[in-house]
Length: 349
Ligand code: SF4
Image (tube, rainbow, N blue to C red; front, top):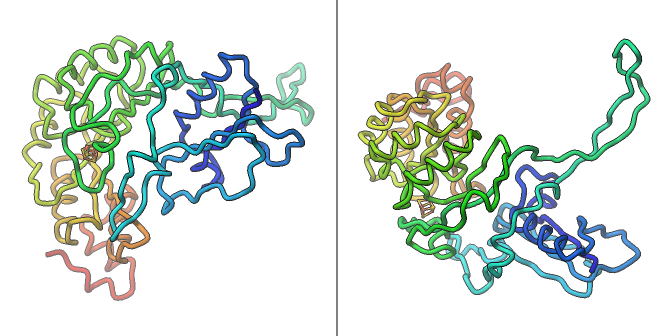
């Protein structure tokens, strides 16, 4: 069979900044059956037997592939097709985003799916690069494994669809060997591994790999007990991040406890997402940002449904998420006064 793949998020943005794990698994599954797998080529003379489109983000962030598709069968999959905005809130429809069969869901991903062409120059006897040379294909995300050890989350935040997709109980999804085979980096996609009853065991397995681990969906500061922090201390990481999404929750003491026991802390190693434009006022946003600064973690402003965000929140994001600005101006008010005409009106509460 001839199989075509379309990473709709990458197509919509013009480039792939993060690999689509589902497509890497689809590719591996078909290649195991000796099918011909390639990125969909709209200029092909021969129609494909099957084309898979996959989309993670809603239409607000990734528009759907709207070109004609030459194929006998077309499958559109991924959470992006199941998300719609109703009364200003993203709603997830489980019936549209059907799960993969287990055989496909647990296959070792095809990490060579994402490649780019690079020019390799010839060199003369002294090692000087010449203008002649050749092109070769290299992996776009080299030496990195991607996958889930656990799925599910108990928190059921109203702006997030993880609980509808994966359930409100954290459950073990896969052993590391299912998606890791000696790579130097591991990107974990688990939505809330901190809530796993096997957290300590999972950290031990990750520590034993010796790889750098990126907890891409963050850790849950409320659940990170001293025992869990000590287990985390054995894992190699460059940065970790938390989320402080609910403005009425006071997480200051949780962050202080973490800062006390974490071996690799500080603003370069620990950041915390601060959700804005959802259920918080500007004052709520500032309070969380200043608390994190005081604890020594770097706040990182996330904007819910960014196209609808007020100007002050966009400016807050620019100040906070640009370290050179954030550490130059100790307060948002000072940043505004120095940067925007009329910024003197933006005083802190
Ligand atoms: S804690 Fe994170 S993963 Fe869990 S429901 Fe909230 S936003 Fe989603």
